[in-house]
Structures are given as structure tokens and as C-alpha cells.
Image (cartoon, rainbow, N blue to C red):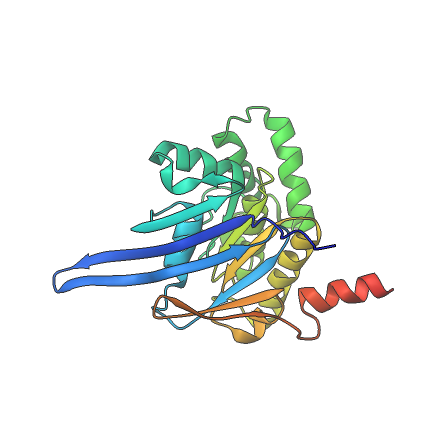
Length: 249
């Protein structure tokens, strides 16, 4: 019997993105074709200027391609209006940034509650309970009522991950989430992503750190707007080998 091919959860089909310059056109992405599967942890690596952030902007719908199709869970997001894309993002994506983007005058708990309120969750008690549960999941229950400036960089990033999970999105997009962290905090953040994938989330992370990328299921390498590498990680301790070890117990 022939196994049926899995349908990609995120499919980038012949994606090209051009930016006009006074001297001509800069091609940030050049005929990119990538399929991401559900419940997969993928790292996108490459030098500065290779197209990593532009690729993330395509997946999140923050920007539209010059040509090509972006299909997420069967929906062609490049055809959405700006308002439709914003609503779709809020319901389906959790985005984690390099610089945390926490609101400094709010507590960590209030930061996590904010996306719930934006999407119409007006039951403050229910929102607070959910936000506290998310902060507990990233070991921040004791810091929940602190403002961002009162906790470490690693703790701020963990709070940002909790905020990204506020509306239980199926997809987490992380753009250099460990770029400003020390090795211990970076490992903690990676551990959270691996656990999220085990729970069924799809995680796509941009990183310049090849050692951290080895923890993912899959590594995609970009150079000059093209895919030059697409490999499955076999590194001991990666999401692949961790899963294998669990099944062998």
C-alpha cells in the first residue's frame, strides 16, 4: 500500500518578494518553495540579509509576496484584505520577537491578558486565570505581578512566549527569540518550544545560532533569498531524537 502524502500545514509556493530601490529592484526572496508540517519544529538559519525575516513576514501575513501563494491550513492568506489578515493573525499565530515587545507599564500578567482582550475576551477573571496558568507553564507564577523591568531578559522572553500563547494559536512564529539571551536562558526558551511541539503546536523559528537550530526537527538554510539547505536534524537531544527516545521507552 502506498502511503498518502501528508498535506502541508503551511505551504509557500513559488514565493518571490521584490523591494524597489532607486538603483533597481532588490529580490529578498527568489522563488521559494517550502512546506511545513503540523506539529513540527523548524529552524530557519542564514546570514544577515539572507531573507529570514522577510520569510517570516510572508508566513505571518505582515507583508505580501510579489508573486506566489501562501497557504496556511488551507487558506490563501495572500488574498486576504489587511483587516482579514490582522484578524487571522490574532486567532492563528503567536509571534515571539527578539526584543520581547512587552508593555513596560503593565505587569507580566497584564501583558499576557492583553491579546485575549483584543480578540474580545471581556471576562477579566477568566482571562486572569488563563494568563496565570500560562505564566505558570513557563515558571513565572511568582513574577506574574512584576513589571518587565523587574525580571531578567530570559524571564521577559518566557513571558512573551506566554503572551504568544494567550489565544491558543496552532502556530508559533519566533524571530531570533534567543538573540539577546545568554546560553542558559536560550536553552530554557528552546525547551519551551520543544514542549509546545510535543503538545501539538507548529513552531517556526529564525535563528543565527546553528547549535540551537540543531534542537529542531528540521533546519532550513537561506542564502541570498534562496533555499540552499533543507535537512532533518539527527543531533542528540533534538526534537527528533527526543521523540524517538520517548517512543522507545
